[in-house]
Amino acid sequence: MTTVAQQAAKIIAENVVSALMRDQGPPLRNTAMSRDAAVTAIMVELLRIMPTEDSNQLADACNRGLNELAVRGMLGLRVEAVDPDDGSVTMRQG
Image 1 (cartoon, helix red, strand yellow):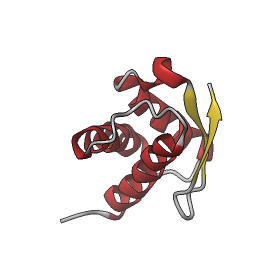
Image 2 (cartoon, rainbow, N blue to C red):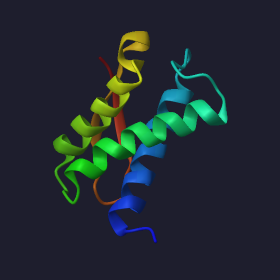
Image 3 (cartoon, rainbow, N blue to C red):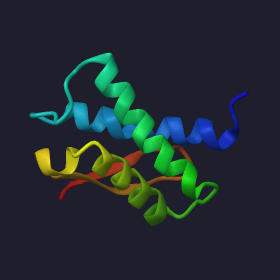
């Protein structure tokens, strides 16, 4: 059974990964396994702090998940903010 926190974490994580993939030189290989690994790493970090509606805490958790994949050093995209209402993310160069 999926909890509300798990659903929210998955939406946020998928939004982060989608934003990374839209970048001109995505740091992730465009494969289902790469995307799934990134979503999972971000979700793990998000679930450690949820429930929270603090955008900064959510963004920090997403960035910790990206750090687990060493994505940060590859391109420098970071999550700047997360809208806790709809899970949308704002990205910035790190």
